[in-house]
Length: 131
Image (tube, rainbow, N blue to C red; front, side, top):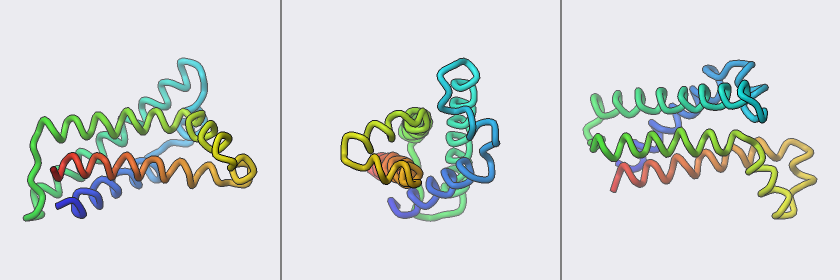
């Protein structure tokens, strides 16, 4: 069940991060103002929604996906909160600066570390759902 759950959550993530993320959200989600927080939280809500839809569809059509509503709600809240936190951009920048990756960050590496952090959050959510 873990693999099915992870694929469903990853699909929801990809949809929310790429075709469903607006230019405004991408440009402003890390801004330190009300506009930035609104863009960030709207983007995180898109993640929660797409992952919820993916999980619901998976539960309907896949034999190996059985969900507990309280655990699913908790996992979706985790996905939204972790995504909003990571997308403030400073956590990734701080990680890269403290681990000797500042040069890589200047050459596009931050996007890879950002996506890796999101995938880790999805794996944790899928593990909780499968437990």
